[in-house]
Amino acid sequence: MTSHSPTTAAQARAGALAATACYFLWGLVPLYWKQLAAVNPLELIAHRHIWSLALLLALIAAQRNFGEIAAALRAGRSLRTQLLSASLLTGNWLIYVWGVNSGHVIETSLGYFLVPLVNVAAGRFVLHEHLRRAQWIAIVLAATGVALLVVQVGRPPWIALVVAVTWGGYSLMRKQSKLGAITGLTLETLLLAPFALAFIFWQHHNGTGALGRVDLHTHLLILSSGVITAVPLLLFAYGAQRIRLSTLGLLQYLAPSVQLALGIWVYQETFSRARALCFVFIWAALALYTIDNVIAQRRSRS
Image (cartoon, rainbow, N blue to C red; front, side, top):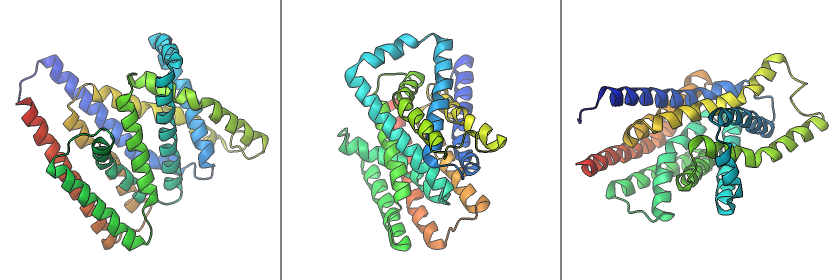
């Protein structure tokens, strides 16, 4: 292993710690959303937009970086890309919250296990990247696991598939964006904030909104949705800049693993042997993908 200076090693440790904390928090997020199961998922996502935007604008103000936001708002093509990525992110949030609060924590975890393989497929068929043999085998193994799940359940695992495709699509859009993590997320949130605010006011006008009609504990949970959203994303951005991509790739499996554990042992969702077999194929695909990725990066450095 290449030696590092003390400063670089310290930064790498801090980055790894931040990324680990990010994925662990994402894994625990069902504990938060479950407490808001009585609130309309659409309203929860609208609040998530509004309070995330408030926190992000405070961070932008602290950095005195409003100029970059203004420049991005004037760039037509970039704005369309950010609007698409914002829509994908919102769709991912919505189906995830609905899935968790509808008793499908295990299936939502499956969606995030599938994300790296969706990214590989998008690289091949959208960006026309060359795939190595091991990557093709990994995709086939994952497809086999999903097919077995369809046979077992009698329907496609559509929650998992939508979660995987929307997050994979969002990752693709962010890869093509030239904006930084905080600026990009702020712009995405800002673009959809008018719709979120209009929906909250409409809910309140119809007498179905949560604010003013729920207990103090629920109010506090709703108002903290911005922190719940922004803190892991900021930890992710901090960690991603300081550790190797291969390390980040390994750590990303922590979040769905924690979610899977919650689904099985906390929320007592069904996890039969047949369903476990489906996951075995997907985990084998992920293991092959990860090992191949690590080997390829070592060859590239050498």
